[in-house]
Length: 387
Image (cartoon, helix red, strand yellow):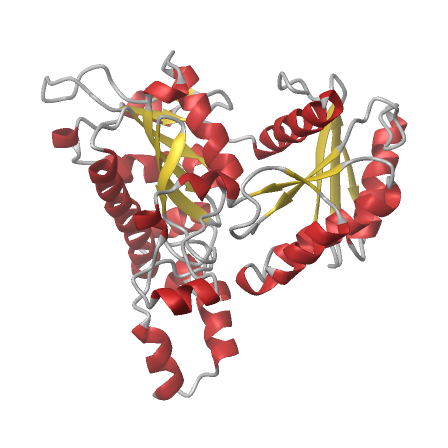
């Protein structure tokens, strides 16, 4: 597994909804799919265990060393992979207010896995951990320090396992050590974030106290004037909970055009739909602003890496994001950009159309958060066993 060779892979989706779906693919075998109701995460994990057992890979396997869990928010306390104890679980639960869409589900997965295999180490790998290296001036908001410290208000960042994996993979693609490379990572999916990574360490990232800040996302607004919240409350009469729901679930691409699937938005925009065109252009504009900002933060950029669902698959988005940036040494080759592949690849030309050198490599690097979680989990358990 640690070399990327999985004994099996799969997913369970639409848990708690009608028409749940389980997909399981053993290494070297055919994909198996089951469409059924999974009332909760416990039922889903038990179904996964049954699929694994059918391939001789059950959760009771003596080869299973630990179970790694993605946990979205670790606050200031958890900046490295952590063995889960009752105290750790209480702290993760205490952080629910700043990650209300994610930490509860993460906790459920931990509780179910602990019940199924109480003898195994359970390890939490935190989305926020990679961004803990940000300098204080990048992590701080310019509000009263006493208030900020009392309520732990600061930029934490998210998608950390993805940014960490992709920045390292990009360095390998360039044939360099991560310590030598400056990378802007663009994790573009339904949730979207950007990071500036210098020498393998995050120095800035777009998401903040919560995953709401930053880029335009599928249903989240991204950056917004804080005064909008006061205006909607005082003038619009919306409650705080209604505003929270608006900005997290009814904004972003969905709020602009009624769709949060980039494939459908591009289809509609190409057909002349003005709302879809506005959504696409707004999305691209925000990404370009962050590229410019992070170029200035890093001073020297060796690569820009596109990853996640939109970043890996939407060639028109990559083309639009990098258009007319030749003065920054950034361009993509249309033919290379149009290739679809699951392999990391460079899509920038050696020379710019103007004849100058393309100083910044533009890459498409499929993320692998599961592999990154497995590696960090194994490394922690292995170190603990040695000590």
